[in-house]
Image 1 (cartoon, rainbow, N blue to C red):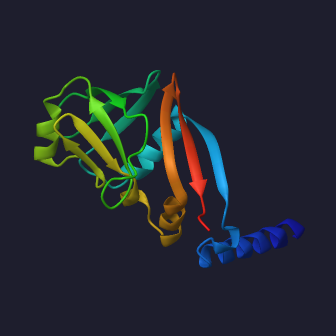
Image 2: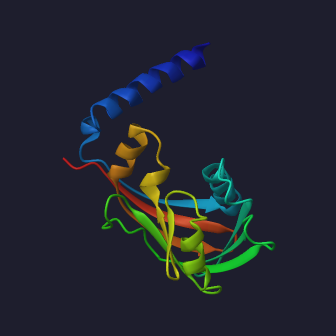
Length: 174
C-alpha cells in the first residue's frame, strides 16, 4: 500500500510537469545513450503493424555499420521479401511536420516504385525511390508523447550486431 501511494504521488508530480509544459524544469539538458536490443525493436514493429492487413509479418535484424535486414511478408507476393537497408546516422529533425528516420534500400530497389504503387506500408512509412522514410510523429498517439518528442533536439543512430544505439539530446529551453 505504501508503494501505491508513492507511485500515485509521483504520477501527480509528473502530470504537473507535463501540464506546465516542462517549465518547472527549464534549463534541463540530458545527453543519453540508449541501447535498444533487436527484440525490443521487433516488439515495437509488431505493435505498429497491429491491424495492418497489408503486411503479414515483419522481422528486423540489426547489423554493424547502420545496416539492417528486414524479412517482410505481404499477401500480394507469395514469398517473403528479404530487404537490406542502411540507416542514416541521425534522425532528421529539420523535416516538415515531424522528425523522420531515413534508410536506403541496398537491394530489391525495384520495390521502391512497387511498394509505393500498392501502398502496402503502414501509415507513417513511405517509399520514395530507394529511400524509406519513417515519420516518427505518426506513431505518437497522445499529446503528452508529442510534447516529449518536442523536447528531443537530436538523435544519433548507430547499430551493432543485434542492437541499435540512440544518442539522444533532450533539452528544455529557458
